Length: 283
Image: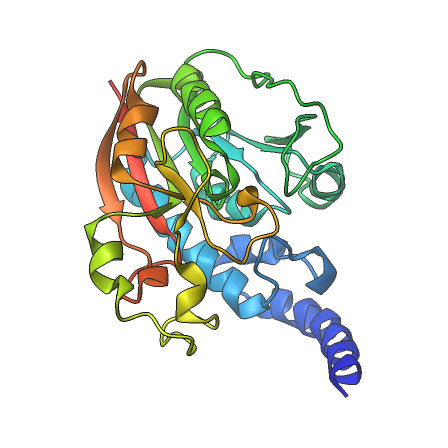
């Protein structure tokens, strides 16, 4: 029965998207939302894509130093959720660049997002969860130094081990202009996390549709013990949390400093998004 319902949903989704694009009035960039099979990255529901696009479009507006003609780099762009959120801030002379380790996702994005100032780059590097057969050498991005107004990374550092996190955080520092900002999501294992830990049960969360105790990060996966993963993962990079001292270590040797923290509702507290959102600025 579930397979039949899913098949019906996919068919209805195609028809709905076609009609919905004709009905859009106030949010033109939502016309880019892909069909069901191309909505990936942990979110497949059309409604959830719209919701998360809105969250990050708002955050971009709040934290961009200028509201138009921005140069925005999206790390782990997937099939373009943040490309949609970024479009209103690109203008005529700005640009959006999406980078991902998935060849399939980059190929889709190149065919789907046809704006002249959108571009997508496949990064042929290893990630244990998403690209286990690719180059194990770390690779700098093909992005000029100090050329970006904003770098965004949605559910990317939650799949980085400590070494990768340090390397790519320094890449963010390298490509950001002075005064530029980075919006990055984490599972931040801070005081709020530990205060709510004892109340987590095996019941469904009141904020999201997964079990509360799925998000207990108690297995160290780094030499420093500041990066941890839950017991259920097949490999650590499936879900990685970072202690505040780990966030501090990321900033060492860079000109990035933390300016804002938005708590995520994965901790069983109200939040604007599931994961924690941290905002950094470059001196």
